[in-house]
Image 1 (cartoon, rainbow, N blue to C red):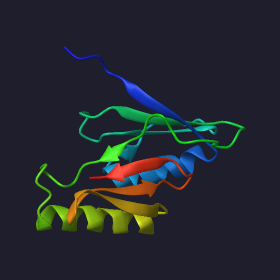
Image 2: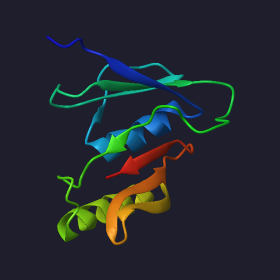
Image 3: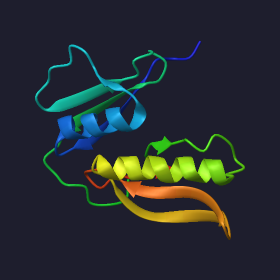
Image 4: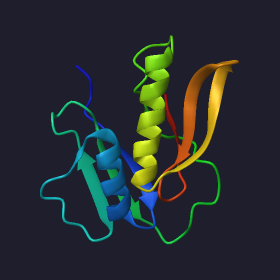
Length: 127
């Protein structure tokens, strides 16, 4: 049996990041979590891990060593439908406050990932 776990991250505005990632992942704000210097989101189906964000005084200074990847392609083939899902999800996330940095390709014309930044500049991929 797997161990339940939570991933945690530092933030300047933990509630804002919790709201962004809840929308990005289909999560919800954790019911009953009322901590002014933190934010927490949970999978409404209780399957995925919780994600917590804590306010820290220092700004982000370098590339994150761990990040969340959003997987919408559905396969390693990355056909036209998968590419459309990746680009549509990236566009949706831009409307929520993310920044699209670039697209990476496995080979010419074969989209692998869309590289993005969340509202606080943390790198992540849509693949």
